[in-house]
Amino acid sequence: MRRRKDRDQARFVAIAGNVGPDLLRYFQRRVNEDAADLVAETMLTTWRRRRDLPIDAENTRMWIFGIARNVLANFQRGERRRHALADVLRRETLRSHQADSTDALALRQLVDTLPVELAEVVTLAHWEGFSFVEIAALQGVPASTVRGRYRRAREVLYAALERA
Image 1 (tube, rainbow, N blue to C red):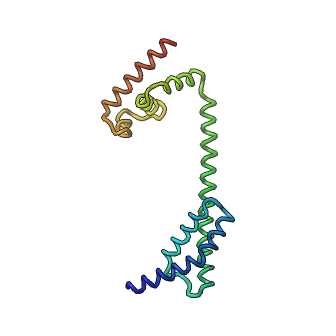
Image 2: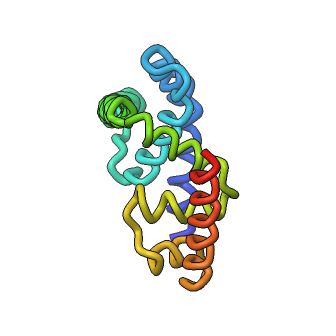
Image 3: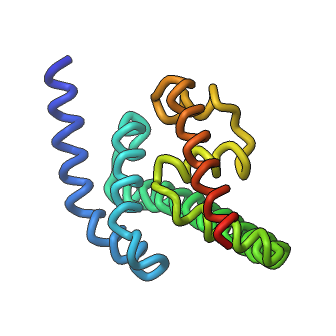
């Protein structure tokens, strides 16, 4: 058993040394910055499927490039999804900012002046819709602490609104 593992490892190292530079160039021509990560992913898949490796060198190279092609396709699909999601988020953010009234913007600015722990309670409760118990779980503090922070935030906000 140990002997087979040693042989598999030695063969894999030899193959990686021969094919690795070609794989790197293949990926660099297509994605540039992420090329090394894609080579690593290809080699990991090759290692996991090492029992399926063809015997002769040329078929082995072609087989590994087939894996590389699939790795690249998965990467490109993921990139398209990430860009599409970013576009949706940008549109939503723009839409939500456009919908804000002058009063809402003034209130946001007022909340931004609160100490961080108070502002977080206010935003989680009012903008994200969390209950005090849920906020306590998120922050890792007792619910009574959240209630106290909320009360202090309300007092500071009321005082600021009265001054304005």
